[in-house]
Image (cartoon, rainbow, N blue to C red; front, side, top):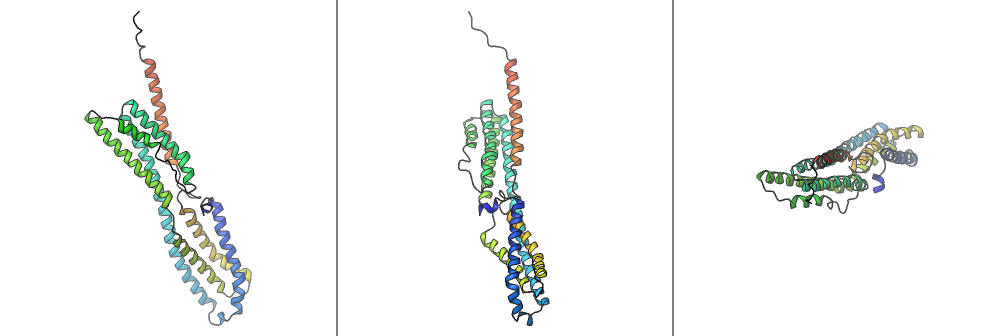
Length: 285
């Protein structure tokens, strides 16, 4: 069903509404004539059937409403995981500024490479519902730089502890994002319940006695349309990283732009310092 979640918002809306509308009209065409030829309306008039229809729609509204709220909450939580990881990258990049140049440059380059990897490699996989295989290979370079540094002064020890804490927060946010990609979705059983409740509510319209097929189909479509729209909203929001409504990698792009700007400024300052430094003394003749 990956193709279903890869559809855009308009495509998915057209698909869901179109299928529900088509099945509703076909149901009216097939079921309504048989109901009229039966003795059902000798026992139940349209008022009784309309009361049953109202009760069924009420049950569906409660179930679908709670499901829609749960799906939207999952989407918001996934967005929070992404923002938390982007913030952890920015904090760690800033904390690395207290290290001596070799370690600082190696760690910051690893963070920039990791952020680019998330945007250019991991995110397209997330949009397909897939996970990267070597996701920690790049960020491990930053860990190697941190572990290789030997703090001497008390200030360096405090800085080392803060940086390692920031690094652990980044790893935690990273795994939370991957877990959201893999596990955030409605269970199949809940989908079956929501779809069956909607189908039962629409099918109850087939029991109404309406002599005109056009009017009967119109009444059925008026009931089916809101049900189809709710199903569309649940479907488009079900997988936070896929479909028309999804989590954006914008937080990573913003952090990457700031890191590249800082790296550019540092490179210019290093070049100016190297140009201003006096030339080494020539060897004695």
